[in-house]
Length: 125
Image 1 (cartoon, rainbow, N blue to C red):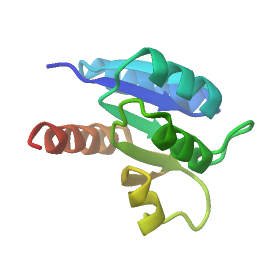
Image 2: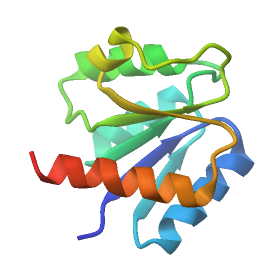
Image 3: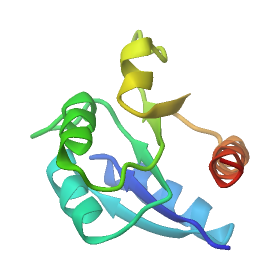
Image 4: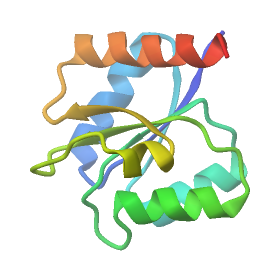
């Protein structure tokens, strides 16, 4: 089964690299440049996993997570992919649906491995 993944990141080059890496592994990948568009995508499609940057213009990652939780739409697990300094997976993140954290720059092989593991964990629930 191919998973549907959403990447929300304002860095167009990095988002494109992540998208290509995951598509080569057989995943269906969509991208959004900010939280506003990310929420619009979630309203229109069902995603199995979201890769989310924390620091973005218009709407940061934490605000996106709060609005997603309040929206009533399907809430897939979220992996934060961020270069924000001091970023650690906290209880606040977990309460908002974050299941993993990856620091930029992300090694493609590591990303693929972590995504596969997260999706396998979701399927077993």
